[in-house]
Length: 207
Image (cartoon, rainbow, N blue to C red; front, side, top):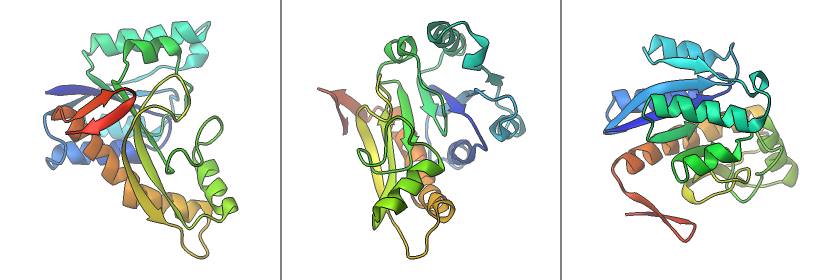
């Protein structure tokens, strides 16, 4: 049984997909031990409360520097004996001490096909605005392990989603969530819980 912590910043739709995935058996051998938000008013915290999941707000603004923030996160994850940290719409630049402590134990969902439309400044609707501005016909989502660089690290899963005529950033965001993010994230958590994901030489392999 793997204990997971889910880090969120907003509404928590990916969190809900994970909660539902555990409930219906799509995510096996997994316990959602904790939800962490950097924003006290994030609706994701209400989702956690409704599901009976412990939650905390830990904001980098409350700490003197990034290392102290990272250590606070480490302390909480160790308290809850977390095996896997899941960034599900978590809009925070991660301190290096946290990444080092949980190397290949932190995954992130990004709403594009990395390496396209990713890195510093590419988050939320900005990703989909970029896709439309480039005239891409296909976009999608990526699940990857987190390393010291933004939207970098070994890729676990990707799924393509069509860009349709007349799309707005909002309609495209919704389609990518429904057709890719909400499917890939539970699957990645399940695969890791089943011991089927290995990282060798910086590349993730599914066994």
